Amino acid sequence: MQMSFGTLELAQRLKRDSVLMKIDVLIEWEKLRPQLTNLYKRELSHGGGQEPF
Image (cartoon, rainbow, N blue to C red; front, side):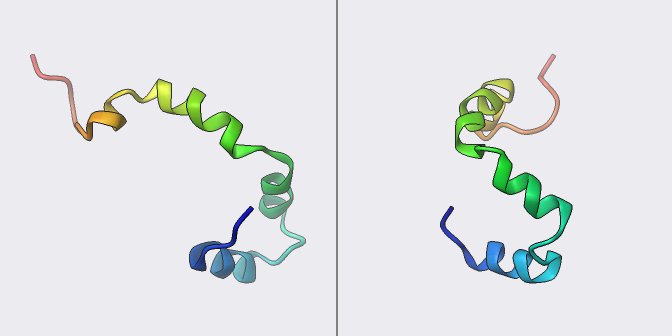
């Protein structure tokens, strides 16, 4: 995983022994991204809010 400034800051705050950091190492987030994106199709169109009537 490439470290961004935000990821680096988060790692420093949570420390490496944190449960969240251990979970992050175990999960392959990029494999999940297509499945999660399909759940939120409106995310692709940048349309937020409630569906129109």
